[in-house]
Image (spheres, rainbow, N blue to C red):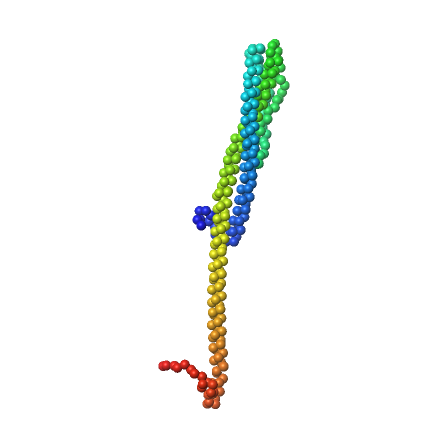
Length: 256
């Protein structure tokens, strides 16, 4: 097994337990990240559909706003200087909120109106009704624009997060988990080899012990046999006669 496909680690049972724990953690992390990617992708598709609808709506709203402004200019003339004089501070304001989607914080923009109507006297002489209509249409256009900006911001953020999450999922699935699995296989094979070597060593030690015990037993039998012949020799020395059994015993020839 190539060392490039596994972690360089000394093969022990403690290391095997550690690698199994890491493998389980990597598999759990892969499962969670995959679920996160699926949830983000689902939300991403929903936002894409909403953006498409809002852009179509935005075209119609801006068209209506342009027509209403043309009507105001045709009836009341140029009212831009009156609007600039009446505009002290902005009435349409935007607040930002955050929405948590699978651990990703998405900004949500919301438009609200602050203060009273600053253009209530605009078009008082003529065209007042058309001015109010143009104001309402443009206010709706701004509201649609803010909503579109919120969705497009979430679109960009989700796109980056989904790419990063998919990269992590692929890295865990194709790099980290196979590396952990190869390391575990390597450790198991090395431990099995150590067990076989230990078994062979114990078998050799046991065989040597048996041989040594057999040699000791043979030496003890030989010493016992010599001890049994010693009283007969002593008796023959005292009496001067040898036992017939000892005389009948054939000894090996000794050549000097």
